[in-house]
Length: 351
Ligand code: PS7
Ligand code: MN
Ligand code: MN
Ligand code: MN
Ligand code: MN
Ligand code: MN
Image (cartoon, rainbow, N blue to C red; front, side, top):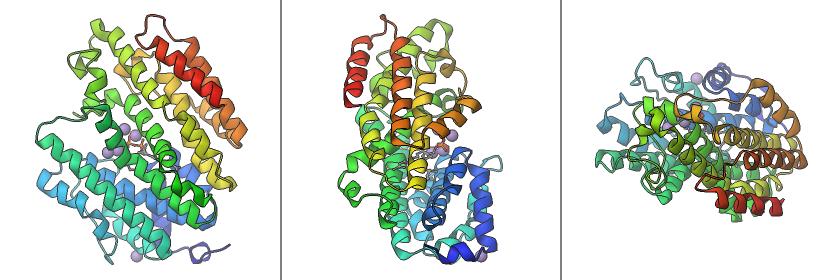
């Protein structure tokens, strides 16, 4: 088990790992620990999607530049050289686009099987992102229905689960049976993305966007930004809790998926983000601070989670712990009191 990339570290590869550390707090650590067979493929997959997301997120790029760039982004992957310095200077991840040549050069050294997966997912994600930007242009303003919400999350995260699953199956680190269970890898992505969207409410409002689905928030208020006024805090918290309940729908799929990853480093790679997500869901649950700031789990908690998530049993214990914690703090006045109890009982039964 050793690849060319392992023995010859090029300046481009060094540059890529520098970009990885620059752009992700949590993913860099788990990617570095991956089995060498998959490490470069997953690292490059990450950087390519990070570059795509940096185009999507930059509100200063004009629509007529942004939309075709998103739609054709996968075509850049077959060029020898390409980079983009159209991002605003304060875009924190702009280096992945100005330094895209290094990413490309290393990408071309990957096995074709890995490259093809990455190209397919980049194409589907870029086109999905572009659809949502067009929606905004036609003033459908953001995510309307729960179906829309799931669709957006599919494009930006379910597809990542799709791609990673294929990479792990090609490497023979995951059961090929997983390819036949798209609902499982879809849930792996949606559980992470929904948690990120709930937690980032304040940050996203500040940036002039939001991904909370209107079908849910409109039960609790007239305008999404109203939750920031003190008189609407209670409704805002009920809304957060409703979104948490919606995210918890993915838990049984997540645990089923994790139970079928055999290789140690791939298991850790899959499990760590998921246990951090359930801990984050417990933190945002019933928490009015989410309406004003970006809450984060404590460093000590993260270290603990990483240690305990080494085995499937450890992961189940973590999910059990946070679900019990959520249930304990559930308020009888919460409009979703009954649904929460039924759903948590259902997960308990599964476990
Ligand atoms: C290829 C490792 C393991 C089967 C850049 C990992 C942004 C939550 O928007 O950086 O900046 O706040 O906080 C990661 C499934 C995707 C879903 C999605 C690619 C797990 C571009 C992660 C990550 C599937 C779109 C990062 C979905 O959050 O976001 C690789 C299995 C990128 C995974 C985005 C979000 C990821 C995300 P933001 P964050
Ligand atoms: Mn984005
Ligand atoms: Mn982003
Ligand atoms: Mn080069
Ligand atoms: Mn976010
Ligand atoms: Mn983020």
